[in-house]
Length: 131
Image 1 (cartoon, rainbow, N blue to C red):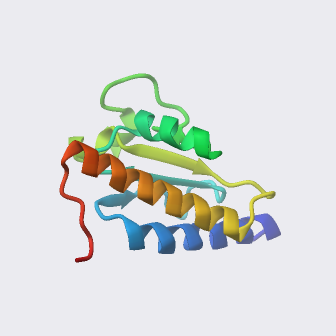
Image 2 (cartoon, helix red, strand yellow):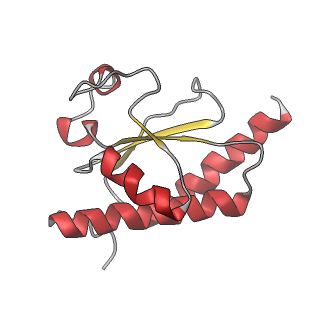
């Protein structure tokens, strides 16, 4: 395992530990066969394109869907993974760089988690994880 691959695995652990503490109804899509620097998650009742635009002004740039998906309503990735339709539009793809730090990753996870919760609150979706 390369030095960068080990770093990316650490990043995935930090990210997941942080975001799963903030948000519920997430399906992790990345597997051990995924590119080491790519983390893909699906969020229930969220439109990923809205999330992208909410993160951009905060300095975070993420992708939606899979890197190879077309502009279908229900993506090929979502179909192949048998994702329920309420998760299909909420696929977020995060690519880590060798220039990222542990703090960058934690800050992204916190910002993304808070963004998801804010959207769900605005949309009237029950999202509470902890009382």
